Image (cartoon, rainbow over all chains, first blue to last red; front, side, top):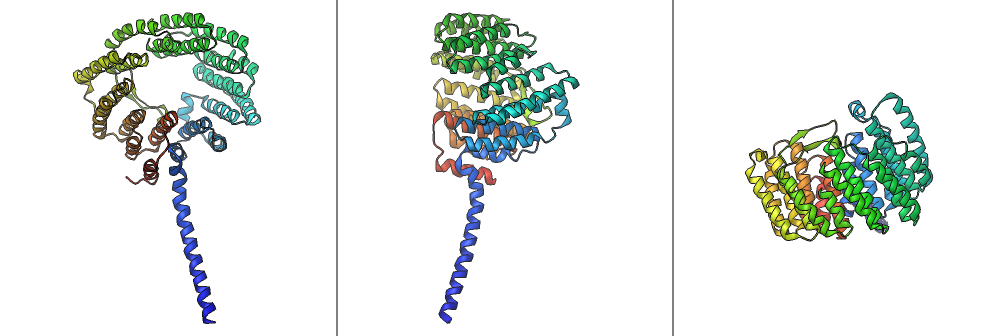
Length: 258
Length: 204
């Protein structure tokens, strides 16, 4: 009897110690989940804790993009969904007055991320909703720079889903030439990656034409136009069109000297 | 102009890039110091330094020379940039000076002068520690962290993150470090993991 009682006590004590140890391990592991992996996991830990929804969306998206890049698709998708939820939270009204198309831009970027991790249907759903959102917003505000930026992001999202024609249609509705050129370069790059040389050349030529029309009214705009032209030139060079690349760079140099 | 030079270098036209860079250098020497602090709405839209300065413009041109393999010319320009920092009175503000020094240090890394780069980064860090405004201090520390990471000093850059208070700049700094790990293919070792744990738990 005494022997079996001491057995029970030992078993109970053992269980208590084991549970306490497990709890301790869980607590340590909680910090460790983020810290032990990498600086990226640690960045995620802090991005989740950013107080401002606008910042949280921006930086969760940045973290997700990097997880996509390193091939951790599952984790990337989880963070993208987390980011999607955050876009539902209201951004500060001062911020929305500054960039009314903020949510549209971010939704399109999330869709692009979803497409990259193989969630094409989800991406297309978000993109069509984002286009509706743009339509709602464009009646209420006149901010061509931000609207153009959001549309370029949407066009980029469609490119990532493989819907190049749709992306091109959207790109052609963009008012600001630097955003239009950005979208066209992305389409041309994807055509090139999929071996469609003729289409690549066609779109690049269009992008070159558009990028030349960037109005250099400020040093930032000049910079943006030059950046696009350099991108176009390097893309031409990648497909063996060195002469065309030189022509584009010469145009870029002229603009840079203005 | 420096970007176009990079474009020429990227498509294999090093000679053409070298034709442009002397002109870019002349332009850099005429850049007037202009540093303003502008706070906008949220931290995502905060720009600490608007505009350029002669030393930063020189550092940019130097990095392009390094890119096309002209390290000697790059070092010569970087030394001019360091001189320019000393000569400009407006650089009294430690935040501005620390940021410019970090930019020059980045140029030295590209020119293969890691030791010199680390010396300059140490001075920048010292200046950063004397910044009173906590938000500006965090931003400058983040900037220095990035340059240490680019110089392959992962532990040191992670260690600086432990001194950054605001989560926003912690995220920015950690992402830069993550990118550098990813670009270099370097593994996160036990020492780095220990510092990461400290960053999370807030231990310094």
